[in-house]
Length: 459
Image (cartoon, one colour):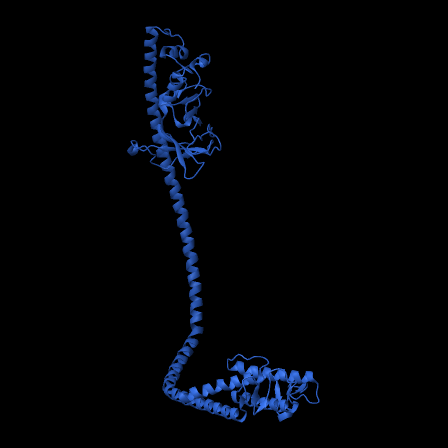
């Protein structure tokens, strides 16, 4: 703080309560222009703060509390990186309060911190005229329409530091009021009183005349309203009569249509009644036949069960006719003692492979008949000279299941089609089959059907 002597030449004479344009008792929220702050104290480690303020009403039941008791009725914008913030102008629509809470917030860090919290009483604010002083820490300045104001404590601090000089009431009155002198005589004053009395009498007469006129206007207004209401009711009655006549005509026309429809629908109703009676009789007959139907259904299920057992027995006999076994662990599977590897036939006798494929062809053909599964590719069983037809309609595309004396590609394709038929049979029994494992797929199918036969015999 600088010495007081440095401000002697700048210290102005300031009135105690500001210009007489707005007396302290008449100050209101609408007179506020904006709010400023000087030398705000930083609460954290930062040198500059982000700040805003909020205004809170003081409830009568909570005036003794220190904290605001309501939600703020105004919140300012945030001024960043400034310890001497000058916030935007206040709106003219603020509610009128003689006193309220002013809370200044530091939002430089989380959570928010309160920099200053103070009660503002409008009539207690003191006029300082200028903001060019060296203000103390956390000073609040209020700009009203007639000048700059602050709290009493701040003004006293400025006076104590000789930045301002206190002006006496006499000096203030001399500056604000001109020299007074008498403006009238006693006679003039009594004449004014008499004129004022006459004026009051005329005002009373004028009030009576206005009252009578208002009464007449009110009666006239009620009369016109009754006339208007009468005309509206006449129009409503007329409209109701028209609606009644129109509705009557519609009802008569609809009644005629109903009578015509009744005559047309009467035979249909009799027919429906007859059908209902016939339906009731048929339901009675059906209820009598239901026990017989249930008995026949049981007989049917028993017959189908026996048929399936017979089919599985036939498949069991077929397996005995074409036994599939393995002579050693690493040897390929054999059918009727004839080896049939899954892929490579180069190291085996062509005739034996043809006979083995013929046995497989015959077994697959019979299984399709027993299981009632139509095969995709027609097979011709001729023992070691069996074949598969690609196109059943034209019987073209016949592929041999023997390799001797034929194109090897056609032979390989015939084996591929045979495996496809076998895969189709496996899929019909919900089994997964590998595309090139002929005897393993056939053995898997035989085992599955044998398990079904054993289960049904147990049942």
